[in-house]
Length: 356
Ligand code: NAI
Ligand code: MG
Image (cartoon, rainbow, N blue to C red; front, side, top):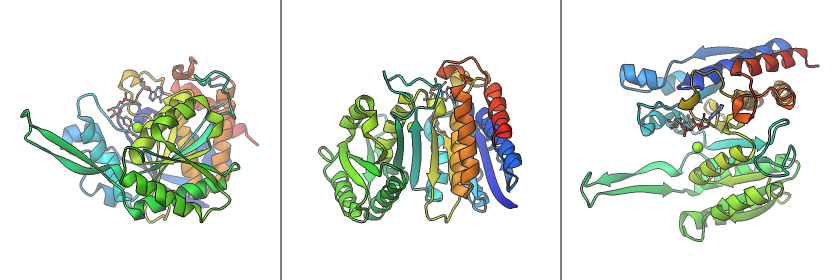
């Protein structure tokens, strides 16, 4: 029996609701497969911890996470705590401290879920966005001067390193190579941003030579929004900077029907540290406590986690169960249904139990 140590950090808003759902599905899989066991440790870090102790997680938080095989994360953000505190106090220190430089965001139109794009159904939109997750526009370099005065300045400096760009490019080409279409689109803004972004383009061309069987092209990020909307079938694997991919992946989630179905994995490809798996969405104050949060994004990221741990069969079983349930029209309100989080979770668990 294979044992995996999982750190669960539900955190804020609907985070605890969707993580509870995800853990139920994982337990059902554990029983169905009978070949592995997840030893889950819960951490009560987040905005409530901040209000009590002045920090989102204890100073030794990252040290306590180091020995785990994976981190299963909900969402951070509270109406009465500034977003930069919640984000920089918990999620980003984990991503950056554990050098989870590849943020992998699959998107597809699931059966039973309508894309807002006319004529686009399952199979027409099936992408993986690879977001550079360690540098770029979110490196945290910058400052403020003359605060509150008319001459106040704020700088936010984007950092691109040859090491950082090369490793994410290699990850993206490798991922594209592993998918049937072997197709990669490299997104930049190298017309207006003529330093880091031009380097990005040059490194893409260099790394491409290592992957002669991958077809690749370049897009400027603004034109990319139009291509995603108008020609979704022309795309497969996509790589972009931290900021650009952040924006494009929200668009991707919306085009696939809802943010509530979009998963993400923060991966350390070298496996020096635990990787972190989370739904893309935030803490969704507007629906917190109503019991209607869509758990599908969390199920999907749980499947990403299982695949990363080497449990590909369990990951596939989970996604088959999810697609059977969405296909049967058992959906939360964000995707046009009437079901609650618990109802969707129960039928997914039932589908796992009954699967061959
Ligand atoms: P959000 O993703 O929390 O919500 C945006 C909209 O999508 C809301 O109408 C919400 O109800 C809906 N939605 C999101 N997830 C859903 C789900 N699973 N099921 C059904 N509907 C869902 O983004 P918003 O409102 O901009 O941010 C709220 C808070 O979350 C902020 O504090 C923000 O900083 C934080 N946030 C945290 C993230 C993270 O922890 N990774 C990511 C994005 C935002
Ligand atoms: Mg985002």
